Length: 221
Ligand SMILES: [Zn+2]
Image 1: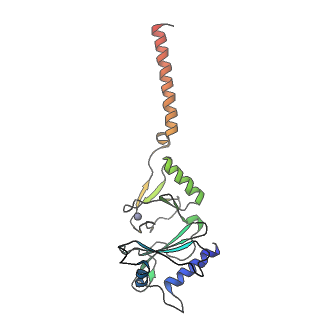
Image 2 (image 1 turned 30 degrees about the horizontal axis):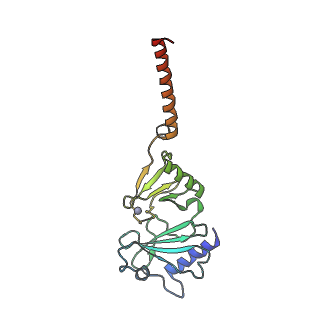
């Protein structure tokens, strides 16, 4: 993992859990930072000012979800390449803890398992190039059978690679923990519009040949 990212994770860890010199961030502190409830019902965000320990990343943002009992805080660290590393937490009354099964551990996301956003969709467990390629196939309508989690609340789609564990994953946009398992339907033959057009042209040509042969027979040369 790159050093800047690692330093940022250590910074966030100290911020949330405290150290010998200062206590960790409380729910009340977080609410003051994001401006809850004055700025609305949320989700609300706060970007940490640039300071020592955060030079090696593009940004660190805290997202607060006051209405979600399972997930109240998402920490987003954007590394130098623009990739987002998300960590999920809930307040247990005393300190922050990781909601069951979700990634709260303050370590760098393995590249293989990173969450990548392309356009409106999220991709989990793909290298960036593959995620971009899959996103293009999704847009063209040729990503047959691609599996994804759908958030029924904000309609975010999260495509995941075959061997990727999907338990405990929350919607990266709204934090909703109840996601629906889906797959893009269709078969190659039926869905590839170019192939379908070629076949249509071929069968039309055959029909025309048959018709002209029939007419020649009927009407003579
Ligand atoms: Zn959502």
